[in-house]
Length: 122
Image (tube, one colour):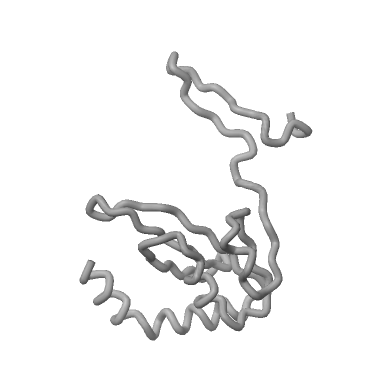
């Protein structure tokens, strides 16, 4: 993981510029996902305003990285329903999962559509 630390140091000034641009926008979209690096689980956190994006890598899903990254942000944070976002001090907007209707391969190899999260849309 040393390459990640070296990379972070090298692009620290660029990250500060990107943070200023994110903070200047009216809203920032935040999300996280688990990844495996050399067999170990980590979390990648994404902060974007659709033009500028910052990624943060953590070993846990603890939301302190969101608090640190968005400290002082006065706009709207758009996120999913992960409870870790609830205590961030800014205006919050929760969004519906992007896959309202999801298609999957069934056991027979045919595509099956799953519905049920939002019955009114069916």
